[in-house]
Length: 111
Length: 118
Image: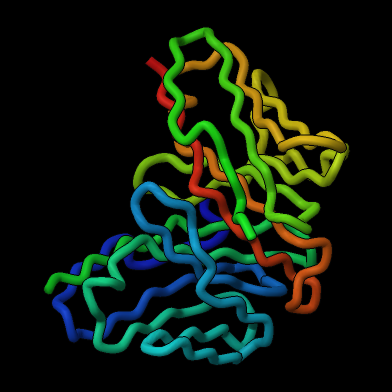
């Protein structure tokens, strides 16, 4: 049983379309992070959110942390082929504790 | 400022052999984490170490797996008597003593070591 459930597991869209990836849990997290991983490489941190209701923007990427700090979403506007990759959410239950990862969402943006 | 260095990047072992995976954390980072990733899946936590100390090994299999982070040198994940099910990518990550977000650790990952057991 995944502590963090990501949906969808796979998403294939055309360049220019928008997409949203969800990360849900029944547990409260002190912070939640989003990573992107490309084939043959390690995950690279995109953002960390710590406050319930927090919204962070990183160019065309918008990250939201739920008010109850149990869920998060990642929205990409006008996706580009360079956005292709495995998107992972990861939560920490307490400051300094280990990160628990979701199962990942594989995004394919076709030109 | 080198990132997290893992070696070897690829390792092939026959069933019953030993696998040793090494991880040098980023300069200034004193916390090391090991994760395992199966194809098309997320990362599963294995162990969290500081220098000469295992903090959390709740994700480590009870047998055949061990990890250390000595005072000098890299962290090592050791798998004895490997089986086919051990085939996976093993990622190491490091973090500073105190993260910038209210203490929440921000992990920097290495590129991983891919173990194939024949």
